[in-house]
Image (cartoon, rainbow, N blue to C red; front, side, top):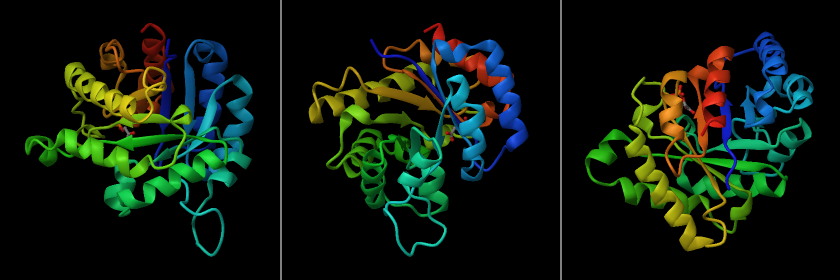
Length: 248
Ligand code: PGA
């Protein structure tokens, strides 16, 4: 009933050449006919991505957006500006934004609201640190991150990405069972807020997903695809991950 979704998060990597390579590859492979594929390059490449990727059925997204609509906020990019560049998605609350750029839970709600108001689908990223997991705080942290970001929002237009902080860029993936447990927790939380949406909402797993482990992760009942960092910079590998999502 839910379609699979795979999102590439390039972070501070990639260039126009990689976009071109990816467009040529996916033009041939056509995996995007079977799985929803989204690429989030750095913002300065979005216009190029709009021309190369949207044209072949791969959607594009921003890696972040401002909690403000417009004004004197040097360096910020609004959700509306992302939409103007051809974006349909925007990542919000990635753990690198939270930990390296001090983005607090408090600003997430504003960002999600701005994204939805601009017609984008926010991809809300949440996840616990290893210390929190070991201290038995997993469920509390997940519920806290969800409730602070999901205020006065439309659950029908939201994607949630579970990314355990200890698995991002570390080569350590959550086991399929560990990931499934949290995905179920998230879906149960959504069911309490918006019962009619819980079975429809796409919940992605992120954190060291590779071609070799993608199929097993995606086979879990509540895992609807992935948010892919490092492995999305390798076009062949990213394609193989999309293929695993198709075979779910
Ligand atoms: P990774 O990153 O796949 O390199 O672990 C995932 C992410 O940060 O979204």
